[in-house]
Image (cartoon, one colour):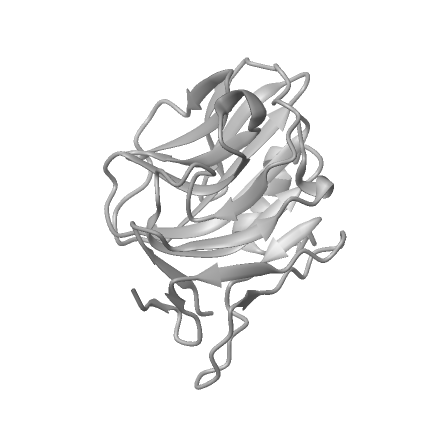
Amino acid sequence: LTSVEFNDDDDKVEVGTNSSLSLTNDMTFAAWIKPDTVSGEQRILSRGVTDNASSQYTFGLNSQQLRLTKENIGNFDNGTNVVVADVWSHVAVTVSSTGGITFYHNGVNVGTDSNTTNCNSSSGVFYIGRRWDGSGDFDGDIKEVKVFDYVKSDDQVASLYSNTNPQTPKHYWKLDDSIVGTATTTAVDSGTGTTLNGTLTYLNNYTGTNSS
């Protein structure tokens, strides 16, 4: 499969403000990533507007650790270094109103946090490859971004990694839907929910590499 390469400046996939992505708790995010570097904060996905209090969530990296941000509430890390530069990793996080936050790397539970506070409600934009305020741009490749509106079990997340029991998410941006020689600015959503295709900006979309 191809992927989209982000180069840590202004590259992004912008999905829009549809309310089906306004998730405050009981949700799962997952993606395949291959970062070029593992220093600082890099965002895989986020939803928000122009200030923390009106924004919702961010999932990505804090150096080699996984980080979930509940905007205006706090940052939550898995606690151990798991992500390596230039190596593909499957990363996921579940956010539960009863069980807290659980992080996964290559299908394995790699850390938890007991926080059960709801994320803010927000009418913000959903992005792939950056934080909603334009910071924390991802440096590397991302593919198969999935959003589920429920909490997956350890076994279900392991299956997402191994693909032994395919599960169709509410929203699913494969980021491999371009045809070589045909430029496109659309990231197709093939999930089961309302179709929310994303718009790719500053990317050479038909090769999966950066153009800016």
